[in-house]
Length: 447
Image (tube, rainbow, N blue to C red):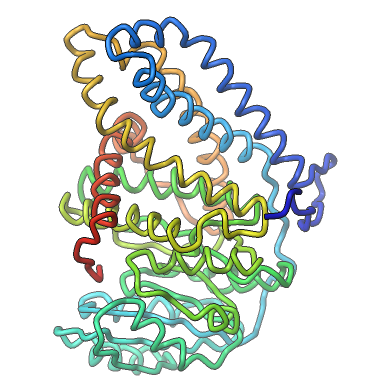
């Protein structure tokens, strides 16, 4: 691994004060470490009280992963977001041909709408669609062919009998003839400028940027409380993490739902592995080969999120399992760039945070209702103001993005409050289930 941070490659914009990526990283690090030191000093009485109940080693572990580490991560993200100034896109209206690759399994109800939104793209170049049916039983391919003809979409339809999303994607990869291609989930709808903006971003980027993650948001947020909470997770939580990672030129997941790739680079790393988190592993293989991945916030797509608890649990446990797969195959120790290694290294501590929240924070919260504040008490609230800062910063940024695209931010106050107060309590146990699935190699599900 290189001992130094890589040099700044982003060009200064019109802002009077120009701060390099290296300096932004150092400023964010120093601020986050200072916050953690302050938290440690402030929490000494809490540590002493908890040590009397569970012993010092366990008390230190609990407080570290429910307070110190989350506080550090949130403060690091907050300062990074405040310092971020993404360079403008150079070629506003690109005209190069691009392929959209869709791996579909039993998507008969959605595929026609997805193709209609592709047909409505405001893009000067030719868009070719490759749909790979992964052994559907509901006639997905027939409906796709009919819709493509109806909407005037140039489309190649393929069939992949071997189950597994990676098999479908790799089958489609062989059929791509353009320099760049986009992966899109069959239930994801593109904003009319999405293709234009994501292609413009990669054409404006340095040569070693091989992928750009699109900005995926929720389109069925009105359906129930669960989807309302997920709307804020995508709009604030996931987007803030991707924007922070994009600042440091290492967006950790060029998600399969909507991302753009250089075709030859994907082929050079062997395409997608047969794993649950195929997009995570692919992205980290890029880093291993010294490529970088950006995030484009103005390239927006809207996806359907789970409406039922069992589907939400299945999805988020898959994500957690995919992260575990990535750490096993292309962990930070295999990365050449310091920033990529650092960002992936953060994922090493996430399972410990999820473990602490699941087995200590939740029981501690129950105990607090009975007046026992050994684990959950005033000191644990220190992280909450930082979370609020992050959400305020991201909301302001997201609103500017939406305004530029003619979109409106939906009002969803109940969802925001529930997301801010309870999302981690819901997510951590589900993530733990995903880690357990990977550790014991339980059966994998396509979707």
